Length: 320
Ligand SMILES: NC(=O)C1=CN([C@@H]2O[C@H](COP(=O)(O)OP(=O)(O)OC[C@H]3O[C@@H](n4cnc5c(N)ncnc54)[C@H](O)[C@@H]3O)[C@@H](O)[C@H]2O)C=CC1
Ligand SMILES: [Mg+2]
Image 1 (tube, protein in one colour):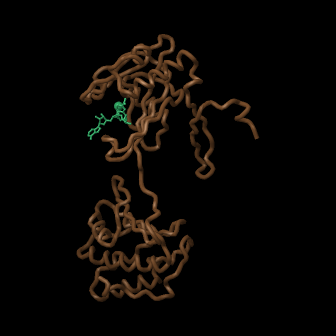
Image 2 (cartoon, helix red, strand yellow):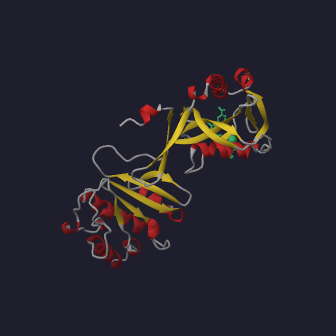
Image 3 (tube, rainbow, N blue to C red):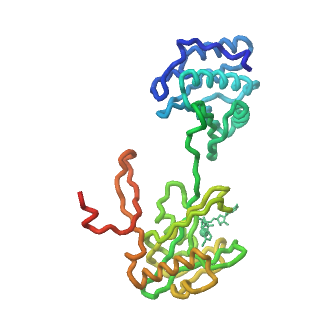
């Protein structure tokens, strides 16, 4: 309610975007807004619960607020939160902040509606919380979106001694076609590890990652909750051969002649194309088809990343 908006002294406003200083609205016990909220409480408001909240500036000029810091919900909290948020946003705007990120725990979800009425929209949600944003800067929002794709990975496991490849038929599909065993990647999981794990879970076959053979991108994938789907097929080498397939997921599982898989009409189009590619590599050399992986230390995170590319001759690898 604008009439109740606490007055913010000029002296309290004005930190340049990107500055690490915490003079954004809920900076601390001495901030004008905090005093104002205390004043509001004195006039019968229940803003006190919100008053201890701090907005954390980010390096892009935005500010991030964790509502998890709040005490348990109380009566009239929505009205008080609404007043607090309106006043805080006004202050952040004065300070030149370009965006607000509001992290709301699931048990305080009712506050998402209050924020939405002030122009916030959902950015993403994880199991226990939702993040809402509001762009305060000039022009259209420049905030990055959340995840755009899901990742599925399958393994083309080729037994080079027999020329047979491991194939399955899904149990839950209306049309039953042969395909390579595979599934969705877990968060933080390497591509090759997903292929090896999914192949083992679905077929009981142990294998080792050798290369990436293909990448399929499909938008508005029906199984991806409206997002796009990336489907990567890897070349794997088996280290066990006795099939013990998952009855829940698979209807059939067998070692099939690669040549037969490349020719059969009973395979998905991707499987058929990758079978032909694999057959070509099997006959002419895998270096003709492999996208191999190399590992490097990441500059910023101190971790390692994996770089996938076609084979690079030694002379090019070591050139300075
Ligand atoms: N062209 C091809 O050969 C095919 C490619 N794919 C790709 O493989 C990847 C996914 O592989 P999947 O084997 O499906 O994953 P997955 O092996 O991780 O299994 C997913 C499991 O979740 C279950 N599931 C999915 N949606 C569900 C829902 N709404 N409610 C309850 N259970 C549900 C499925 O029945 C399945 O058991 C995707 O990237 C997809 O595009 C999938 C099928 C065929
Ligand atoms: Mg699967």
